[in-house]
Image 1 (cartoon, rainbow, N blue to C red):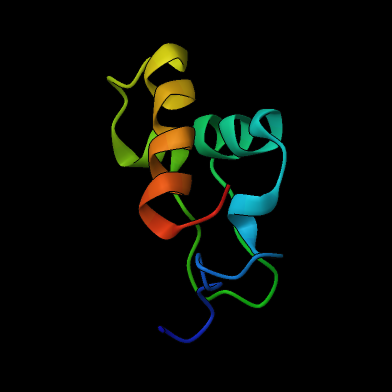
Image 2 (cartoon, one colour; image 1 turned 120 degrees about the vertical axis):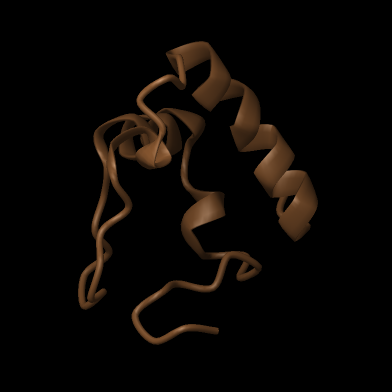
Length: 67
């Protein structure tokens, strides 16, 4: 794990948040408290649509084993 980056596999981690929260944070960018860097808007890809972002949330949960 990287310093200041929350663990994505934790059952109470960022991927346990509601879909709407994850979509909003991805679309608008987000900086975790204490993190040295922020996730940029749209994950750094201005071409991502809201539909793209909504589609990736279940994929990330599946990849990291969070249901």
